[in-house]
Image (cartoon, rainbow over all chains, first blue to last red; front, side, top):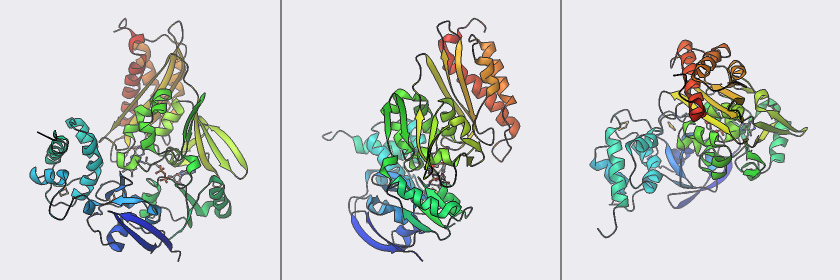
Length: 162
Length: 292
Ligand SMILES: Cc1cc2nc3c(=O)[nH]c(=O)nc-3n(C[C@H](O)[C@H](O)[C@H](O)COP(=O)(O)OP(=O)(O)OC[C@H]3O[C@@H](n4cnc5c(N)ncnc54)[C@H](O)[C@@H]3O)c2cc1C
Ligand code: FES
Ligand code: FES
């Protein structure tokens, strides 16, 4: 069986592993690195639970092979909070607006939305719904997630000295 | 839901990829963005012996404008969506891109992958038909330029041979007075379309329609040009009656199928309504209000 040696930087740590070509990146993160914050729902690109940042851009980790991540930089939900005790403003906003119930979908939503909240100080509801469209949530009805995005944008783009 | 075992080769040049295709023929599969191929592997609908990854082939990721607009097959869909040269020279592509799946998919998905995959409901094949694009295929036997209208055969089937790579897409410059429009209906933003239309046309000095190209998707086994509508439009003076007649005519050319998302009859209805709306978008002021 072919095994390939890869080097991937995840949340600032560089890992070296020998992997089978068919290993999905989602399974690499969960099973090889123990980073189980990345969830797996459908394994065909529809639900968005497995979304991670690859070189800063959101991608489905279930639609990439681990070998394709060789030499790349990844952020998973474990790498979002600034430290052990504080939450990222987007996580804070999800918590305050009750944007999660079972929480299964939450890591995927957070990773999809991170680049969006960073670049949108004051998004419209339509823009937010379009940004959410690639992630499924079976609990919340999305309304509170839209609220969370609004709050996160306010928190992140508040005037510094106000 | 895990891919069956396969061997993996990361190609670093077109030549390297072609070598693998020649050696392995039908047993080899090209991996581009993986956004259609990996789901197919995960479902075990395909079991290639060897995957050739084109992602490291940097010579296939480019956008160049030099008279002709040239787009490398490995150009990401997200790049097409954001690129200013594309917005200037082929705004129909810019209009269509937000409808192609979701940003997370477009980050990886490529233009070449979408065209080679040839999903009947995909936007980009129809856009290439409407823009009169030429698709360039390369094998060790040489290079050939295939007009878009001869490229899309049917359900997941194209003019590409197993030893060929799609390398680039060439789009001729749009003559002055070219109008374009894009319309689709999907269940949710980013879902595959139930039906859609991409069209371009020109208005001559006398205000008549010239060189209309009406491409439909989601309503046939592959994207197609509606010759019936195009015959009616070519040389005609824009009017609301003409718009309605052309929209009715598309029904002659399409054979939509029924599935859990929509019946064939509903898809036909959508094709007509969307064609009329797209023609109104494109003709705009030229349509006047005389006939209404
Ligand atoms: C949830 C979801 C929703 C989607 N929604 C849409 C949508 O609304 N509209 C839409 O159009 N698409 C949609 N897609 C598909 C997406 O756009 C894919 O990116 C695209 O169909 C395939 O491009 P790719 O680069 O990912 O190719 P891959 O998946 O890597 O390859 C697809 C096929 O093309 C072949 N191939 C790829 N590149 C070449 C080449 N250069 N030469 C020869 N053969 C090649 C491969 O061997 C394979 O058979 C969706 C996908 C998902 C997962
Ligand atoms: S598990 Fe990857 S999109 Fe559902
Ligand atoms: S909170 Fe349960 S699926 Fe979203």
